[in-house]
Amino acid sequence: MDGVYEEWIHTETKEMVRTFSVVTVPANELCASIHNGGRNPGRMPAVLRVEDEERWLSPGLSEKDIRGLLVAYDPALMDAGEMEKDYLRRA
Image (tube, rainbow, N blue to C red):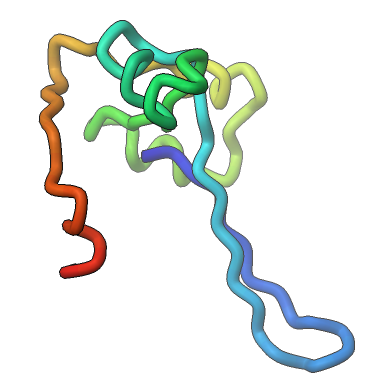
């Protein structure tokens, strides 16, 4: 998934703070009914193609290049299924 990550020093506590955000894009047909239980069908996490991973990490990307990578993943390359409700509690 596409994301942004930052490490910084908190000015008051002097502790290292690590933050991460998942980048979202308009949802493809498969994810539109899934994201947030269908309550927000307009978006999904951006998913990088393997061949674009190094490019995404390149510090010199232009805004145009970044926008070109932020597209909905091909739903034909995805699969979806149900998980048990208590899955996260067991993990």
